[in-house]
Length: 207
Image 1 (cartoon, rainbow, N blue to C red):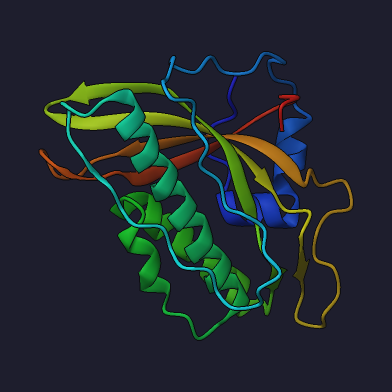
Image 2 (spheres, rainbow, N blue to C red):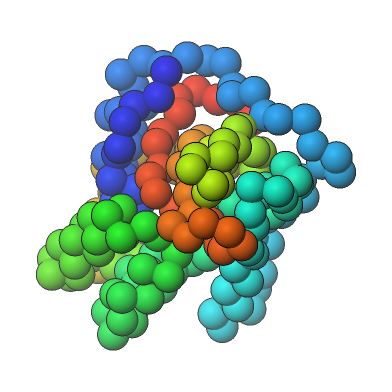
């Protein structure tokens, strides 16, 4: 069972997601589509202090293979997470940059949450890493692709601080969580997938 629509950025970074996970969900991991070759996409940890490059957005269509949709969905969610990291690390980063990776409604909702964090002086030190991607489903909806992606989100290599530099995370927060990401095309034909929502999945051991 999935818990609908937790606030993604502050949920993982501040620990709001922990209370959602404790509410009780299925222990069974999602069943991915069978893919060949197996997925290997991830954000690689690095000692380089500079900003890593954003992944390229991959255009897909209803004629694309499952492996192609997986690659497009992986890059879309990875880019979305990296932009959110930058927005929480640097208050001068333009908030509008998020909209290239999200649908208008979900992107606007995330921007409001990010602005609340900025107004409160909350900020991120370090990065959130995502890995372990699987394509759970893909559909043809009126000629456009809609996909569900499974991923593992890891916040153990970051700190979330308040305006005084103190820890702003709930001490009971889950720093490694499984997420299901909803992605869709806004344009029929060959176009990128955009993040349309992120839901937490409880007690999945693989993360």
